[in-house]
Image 1: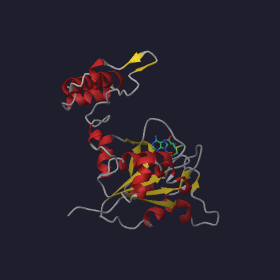
Image 2: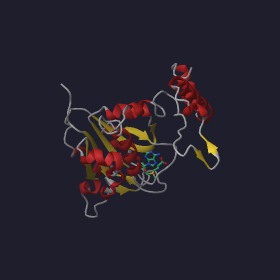
Image 3: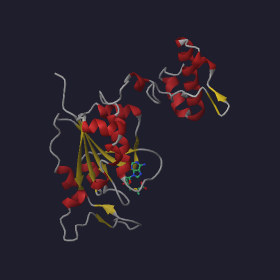
Image 4: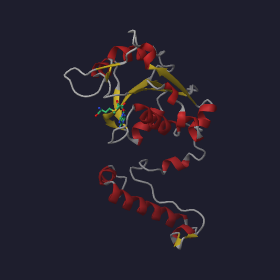
Length: 240
Ligand SMILES: C[S@@+](CC[C@H](N)C(=O)[O-])C[C@H]1O[C@@H](n2cnc3c(N)ncnc32)[C@H](O)[C@@H]1O
């Protein structure tokens, strides 16, 4: 039997008012309004127990900044209802995590529920990551000031893969990373703009030549910009 429950994102954050934010607009926003996915936002601070409602403390061993306390975060995680389909991915956003890939996004969008823990300060006490089995995920080799924007990026990438979100789903298959390559360049009207014209082949109406040109462009771009992807595509048989 097909699972008809909406895909669910559960976000744990110290800044619940940031959500849905950009996720309430455009494709993701329409899909949210249409019930294709649902969003639950949990305020981590609501689980602080001391009189100052502290969610962070100084790092053992010294050093700059503060660390999110494991007891407060664990209480927030434990407050979540069990996943409706019995299956949930539990992510902790961190620059130290495994870099997110389109393949992982596709797998997450096929999981009924994704829990996203947003770090702040210097990050999260390591023990809660281990004790609650959180998968450490990074959205890139740079440092954001908090996990919220990273969580939004993960959710947006997943939501656009859900059935019924993108009008022409066939377009998704040609996108960057799907075939292990970056996507070919695009052109639209006007046909001549600031003296620049569109590659002739795209005006030829010859579908096979257009397909071959796009494939060649995708391969050249990937080889130049992302030698790591190119090597993998060749190894997996996608770029030859
Ligand atoms: C200022 S950062 C902490 C950086 C940490 N001290 C380090 O050097 O790895 C605060 C929070 O932002 C989030 N964050 C920052 N960069 C990120 C990235 N590239 N991917 C995912 N989350 C990120 C994480 O949740 C992190 O706990």
